Image (cartoon, rainbow, N blue to C red; front, side, top):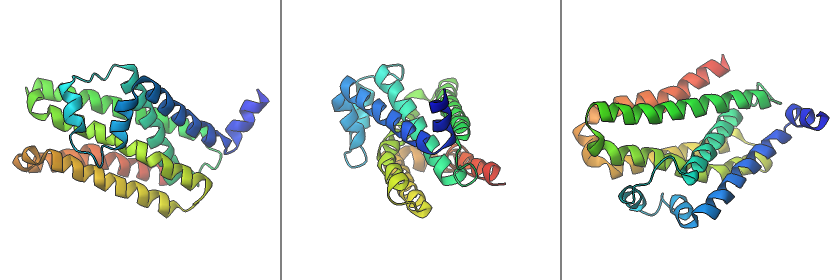
Length: 212
């Protein structure tokens, strides 16, 4: 019990969180090594998500669930280090709250995306867009984890961490646009509105609520 309290009250909990993320990666590699490699190189290898859709990849598989929780851990840890660490230097409980928020938000967004598409009868039109949007988020998280580790143990410079995320975020946005350019150009206004509302606004709201 005292050992657990010591972990919670100092920064060693970050190491445990990182180890948990690495364990999830190892489990994914054991389950589907080829698929995990596909996600790792998806930023530089076109066609991966077309193949995944053609194979009817379901969200409710052990691999996809591990990938989802891996991503929520990485996003939560990044947000904690970028926004909350200076306010909660021993903030394991703050991280848990952030993890709950991120998990809830991503789950609701996934559900709402699918529900709205089904209600409006747009599933066949935007299915690839929705898949690439969530897929490239997972890719971003896989690439972001090494930068988090470097920040935690080598480059303790917040600008390094935020710049790394910003570059990956821009690459993700570009690839989503490039892979869905016909849909985006035909519905440009709605796409910009959607992107600002569900991609950028939550980050701004979280930053505002945690720094004031």
